Image (cartoon, rainbow, N blue to C red; front, top):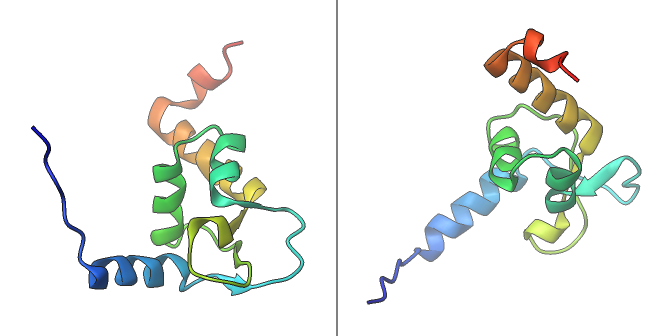
Length: 100
């Protein structure tokens, strides 16, 4: 049995607008990575990084020229990594982070 989910075009368009609304159009992307690669480098799920973007937790968001698609959304991966570390510290506590 297959279940089909329909996504309205308007909902997708709204999501894209929200995702890219804080992004600055840039040609110099030094220090920035595409959102998918940044999630791998930060050792987090893509969903978590997208939530950071949507919730305004990141200021380093860039849009490479072109369509509003994931490959054109870049983030400052060092800022994202630091925000991720802060979240982890809050969730599990600093004592566990010092175990090696």
